[in-house]
Amino acid sequence: MNETAAEVIILTVNALSAGALVFIARVVRPLMNQMSAPEFKIWLTRLIRSAITEPLLVTVGTLPIVGAVLYFYLFGINHGWFAAGLIAWLVGSAASKIINQPIYNWVGDPRNTDPGELLKRRACLGIGNNLRALINMISVLLMVAQFGPVETAIATLASAIFSVPLIWFAGRYIAHGG
Image 1: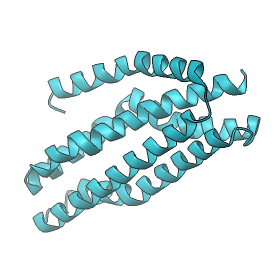
Image 2 (image 1 turned 180 degrees about the horizontal axis):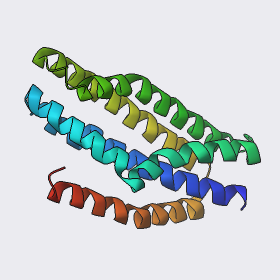
Image 3 (image 1 turned 135 degrees about the horizontal axis):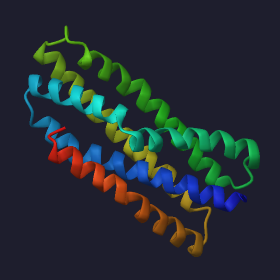
Image 4 (image 1 turned 90 degrees about the horizontal axis):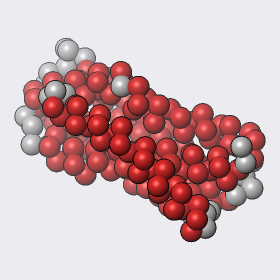
């Protein structure tokens, strides 16, 4: 596999991840904000449980880390824009884990039921999700800057093809009520 092929694959997965994060930050977040504190707790706990057991989401969330390590090992930082995009993705991922994981842990603990604190955690989660979506979109734009029009068209087509299972997953999730 050559460097450009590896970049197209990583970019495709990163673009899918960015799309999912924008969906969460811009579509799911307003729905969360309409929920009462107890509803939010129940819903977020179910969402996390579903997300961590869904193979496609786990793959889309994990593959860029493996891809980044392999990419830097095999190709170094010869393509500066792409390397900058990978670094931005890694920073966004780390920031998201630092901000969101303690919230998920706190909300998922059955002993934590204080409505005021749940609403505070929900607001922090919204900030974390928006930050992650923004950084991920920036990383995609940095990666795309590395390519010419043909590679960009291929990555766009691959993203569209790979989005079909994500659309199916979203439909299944909504149909089954989480």
